Image (cartoon, rainbow, N blue to C red):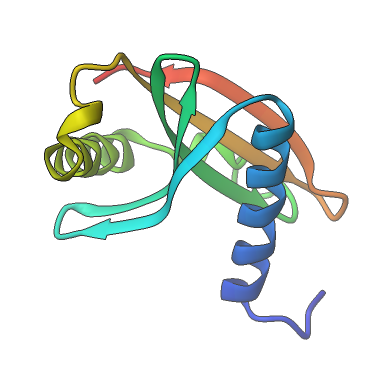
Length: 120
């Protein structure tokens, strides 16, 4: 694992999280949406709800769990990015919006899905 870059490991974690969410019945609307406000890893649909999913990976918890890294500053940026996404996709703007965190931990990349992790 040490031979791979952090960007490669992050992409692999994101792919695994995406596959997991699709198996759980969510539909991918966008990946890696970038705007001035920040980036959204995944935008999905869960029934009628639009889901903004932040993917976090940590090989170990020495500096906190992956979910703990989604702090107030990161939440603010995700909310601002979600607003921008909805402005560029007006057909989705009236749908309920939910912010999830998918945390992958350890070398086995154990998945913890935190639905409705925070509110806008």
